[in-house]
Image 1 (cartoon, rainbow, N blue to C red):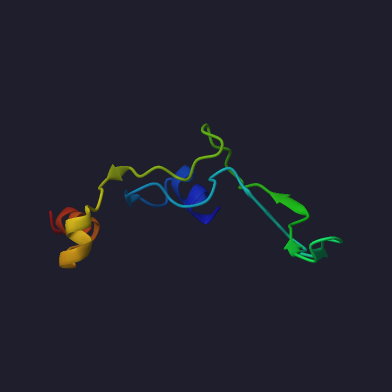
Image 2: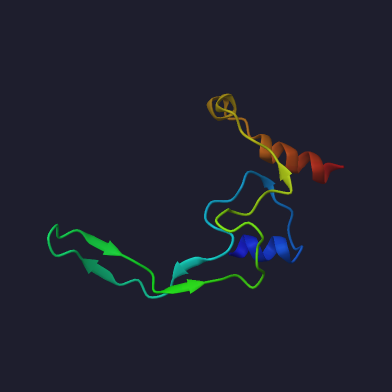
Length: 93
């Protein structure tokens, strides 16, 4: 939700890939644990639907980057960070 508010309020430029989680809100608040009667599995769930101040157009997606940059498997193996490279190049100009 912080990313949603920063982007919608034009307070940040996002570089890289879509953020994890939904930009439209989250379920949080009190997180009680429910123990299922037959399997005895424990399940934790949120009781409040928390929404960001700014509403988003694409429900169920994360915050999309302003400057898309995708890391390849080769980047990961070789320790390269094309996202940071893009940011440093941008602020260097």
